[in-house]
Amino acid sequence: RFNHARFIPPDAIFALTAEYLQDSHPQKVNLGQGTYRDGDGKPWVLPSVTRARETLSAQGLNHEYLPILGLQTFREATAEAVLGSELFAQQKSKLATCQSLSGTGALHLAGLLLRACQSPLPKIYIPEPTWSNHHQVFSSLGFPCESFKYYDHDTRDLDIESYYSTLKNAEPQSIVILHACAHNPTGCDPTKEQWREIAQLMKDRQLFPLFDAAYLGFNSGNYDEDAFAIRYFVGEMEMEAGICLSFAKNMGLYGKFRGYPPIWRAKRKRSPELIENAMIGERVGCFMLATKTSEAAVNTQSMLEMLQRSEVSNPPAFGAKIASQVMGTKELKEMWFTDMVTMSGRIRSMRKALYDHLLSFGAPGSWDHLIRQSGMFGFLGLSPEVVLKLKNEYHVYMAGNSRISIAGLNPSNVEYVARSITQCLKD
Ligand code: LMR
Image (cartoon, rainbow, N blue to C red; front, side, top):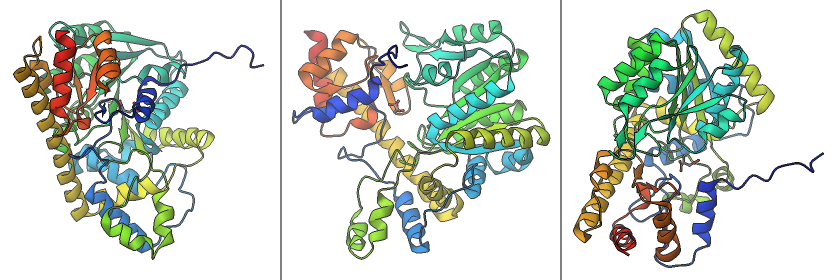
């Protein structure tokens, strides 16, 4: 039976992290996987999240099942945050929501639902380049995936004309993957004006917008600003839309809790429950579907419930409880917004520091694209040979397409990274 099973090479980004962890060089730098690090290069537990955990712990956590669709308060608070209170109040009855295993789980649920609702299977248009998992998620569900040119490697900018022309010529009823903000890997987003044009073209052509929204609030530090495109499509344009949300980046809930803040360390002795809770993974996200009628919302939500039941039965509780606590408590929500300003601000300052060092070392080429880009990533535009050399000779790790996670930079390593890039390019 399994004699013909194919060997699939390990995922490039996770493999890179594993390689980095095995490297014993004292100056090694990990700019691969997109995970936030603080100014000391350490994982950062958001203060708002720490506070939410303390409250939950005081309430006494249990390990009961969640409902199949997930935690109701979490689903509601998420939808309200994404749409803003006013639009949420208008759209509430036309929304279907389902808690998911982070952003990837949300994309997968979206794919399952679309596959069940549309026959023959629609085409999915995916920007090129894109997050490395998009093609895999949808092609493994059987969708025909088609790449379109999003980025111009010569101008090192968004190729908006190619984008428009793809939409004008797309097969009606197809699906288009849209990065809601902080496009991964290029860091180039459409302007508001361009988003309006994209929405109009998609509406004219009856294309379905499927937003990958992993960086709301994390991109600019302003959640409302980052949610502009979603709100415009759903609110102003009254379009059906799917929104795939992750709390990995903007709430720092990547996987499992990685360390105790000092206050917790003191409490740990007294409360074994805290230790146990700290081992629980989060993986929290949400799939949200904006439909046109309350009947469509009820029906699609019932389908999501069935699809979720057949796949994971019901989602994990801990992350949803944290996120719900943060978003549902006025004080914690404000803290969370401040936390996002802290993270995005630090990333912006490191982006600028890298740029300044590259210029001062006289790194060959122009680097303006680096400060035009935004979000977690910098898309350097280095050749695969240079990327490999940086890893092998300088112990600087980045994705093969020369995407760097700017969050991996800090005041202690940014100069070293800039010097290494410069030397590699001059050699
Ligand atoms: C990334 O793009 O590096 C992150 O979103 C992590 C991942 O799952 O690929």
